[in-house]
Image (cartoon, rainbow, N blue to C red; front, top):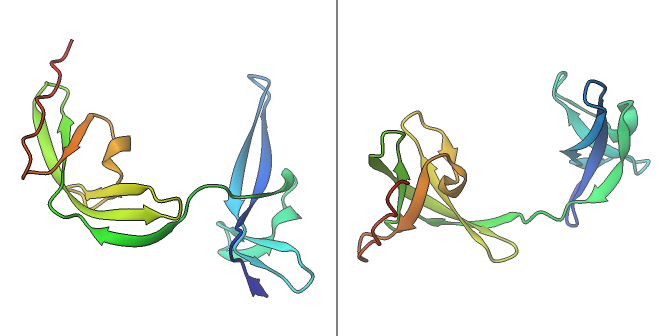
Length: 142
């Protein structure tokens, strides 16, 4: 078995919804290649590696173009601000920044339940700011 390296690949799987007559695709990362050069993916039900094409809806392999995390930096005191349904605001501290291989930075916060997320993708997200700078006033709710 050979571990999957750069460039990374994903296995594509076709799903058809008869009720709406629509087709969509999902992907699974290729985590390794066997000695016969067959792509291997994780079967979540068994927790084992299986041939990517062992699923009946296998649609092929493609290079994964999404950026990868190559480093992590401390949060540096940045704050993520959110607006609640009642219009009040609350904040979480940015605990880290993920550095992607394309140069992008992605903030990470940990909520009260211990879950990590990118605040810019969360419901109610307003802005990121550093307390050493005067934060701009949020736009009023319409």
